[in-house]
View 1 (cartoon, rainbow, N blue to C red):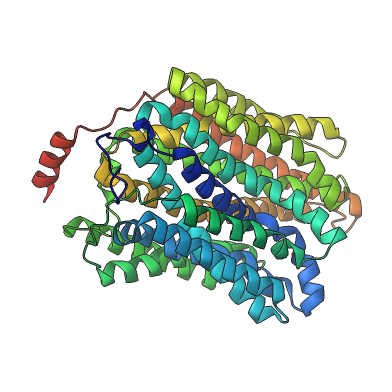
View 2: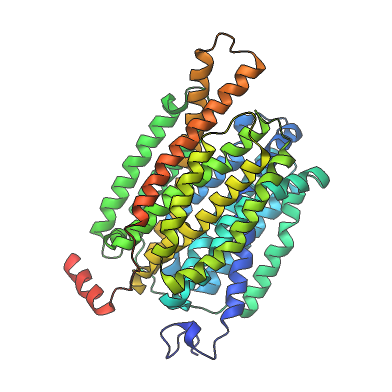
Length: 496
């Protein structure tokens, strides 16, 4: 094998001399704890408010700021993947993440804690595009499903188990240990990668278009901030701070997109959307992100409200679904390699739609077993849809578009997350307030609980409608094949 990681084999995994497993271990360990960190802090926000004597609006910047920074840095990942080697980029991002984690662990005031959190977000945001891109280059299309299933374990299992894990840590050790426990694993990932990780990507150092970076920062940053701010006050989407930033974000994204089509070396090549299965995968990804958030955000509110469960009990009810999601993701990837996407996505989307309809019938007397089984069905369906859809879409891209395809996909994760949270919280509040306004005794505890249940039902019914769209899209999917390089080059010349 040559110094830059190339060999006579088209894919590194086909080379019998290559050591692929250490590379995978390096990337997955780092990614797991970086992604876990996204939701690890959510349950500790109340504790932080008391510790630093700050308001809910202020402490929410721990979550809002994290998503905001990710939305800003991820669009630049395609450029960075072509400017730095795999080793440089992975070791650099993990080092940044570890520095941020250490700052959070030793923070004596909220501003320092927030700075550490934002530094963490830089590392986390750049890490997933690196992992996606490396795995696309290492493994041929017919072997990617199982490998991407492992990535799915990281993307979905880590944030799903975060609230349960953090509840235990905060209760028995204190909030600082949310960061202290992560540091050794981050350091191990850095040392392991330093020893075993080789360069996989080709460093081409394309021209940096500063105006594109400005547009993307304004566009994606404003969109994430605008939607994330929708739940801060009673006005919701009618608040000037919300709709002004959303409009600014849309304008920024449109300007960014138009500029990319004019550049010979775009920062994010949006021509990835001319590949139908890639576009299909993006649509399925966004729908699943939305429906996931309807459960991960709304279910705890329902359980701690009308059902009067503690935070720890609510987290434990969601644990079986989270664990099964992690176990099933690699299995679904293996089935994807063997049978293709439709065999998985059609039945999974039907089960998802049926479960969402069932959850739209929740009430104050719903058994805990209904919630556990419902959440298990949701998370298994998600594992059978999300990673197969993403993998199938990326499989259709030619190699030169891998950095751009992964960059677009990972950019949409915080954007979709911010939109999902704000939309579903706004729908819940709107339906709850409508119920209270029509009630003769809106201050009665029973009425308040009934209003909350009405809001939860409305959210799940909306998610049911979204899942019907997923069923329709599932019937349209087919196994994607990579674009022939010579054809792609010819098409590229025509486009330019």
